[in-house]
Amino acid sequence: MLSDLVEGARADAATRRENTPLSDLERAAADVAPALDALEALRPAEKVKIIAEVKRKSPSRGHLADIPDPAELASTYAGAGASAISVLTEERRFGGSLDDLRAVRSAVDIPILRKDFIVEEYQVFEARAAGADLVLLIAAALDQRRLHELHELVGELGMTALVETHDEDEVLRALDVGAPIIGVNARDLGTFELDPDLFGRLAGGIPGSVVRVAESAVKQAADVAHYRAAGADVVLVGEALVTGDPAARLEEFLAV
Image (cartoon, rainbow, N blue to C red):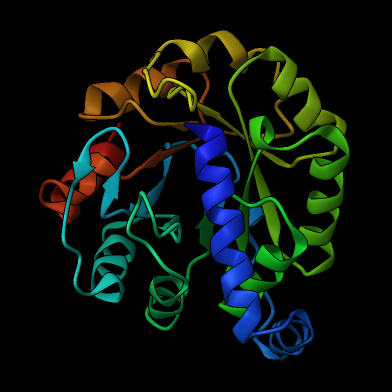
């Protein structure tokens, strides 16, 4: 599944490159307002912080929500206390787009994460040109040299990388490139099965100087509490928010 998602994202980026060459993106990225300080927004605090996600569908669950106005949803998230907004821009399996990210950027003044299967420089420049402050880099999708190169580019453009991991080796790889924010995704991207205890097993290997983000397997406040007790500074939540009352659920999660 992961290889299919990566190849699809690569093919879609190639199509966009035919209409917008990298040189145009580089100029656009230089012209947008500087990226917001995502590390400051997500740094550990007395209460857990939430990255709230704009997510229409997923390969594992299919259709989740229509979300005709991602800017309105993002504004709801921000008003309810989210520390950052994650915007899925993958088109084929998640129904997202860079237009969603641009719409959200125009509506909120908190950091925005471009969540996609990023494997090449073109996609990083796309993220910055669209107004992203954070970029997701999935360790399982990148060899170490590529992870290092893309992590460096994200920083050079003033953004912050959230490096996603799924096992001890990937945590070590994230630390090796100097990732300031490390996510642990409870969902296996090969089988899409969930392991809610994975974060707890890996969190001890992530230094306190690094922001620790728990991803996936959140349905209710008890799940957020489970991650918080295991050492999560931040929890990224999508499905549980878009399939219910976003503001009410977010407020419940932030009360943990």
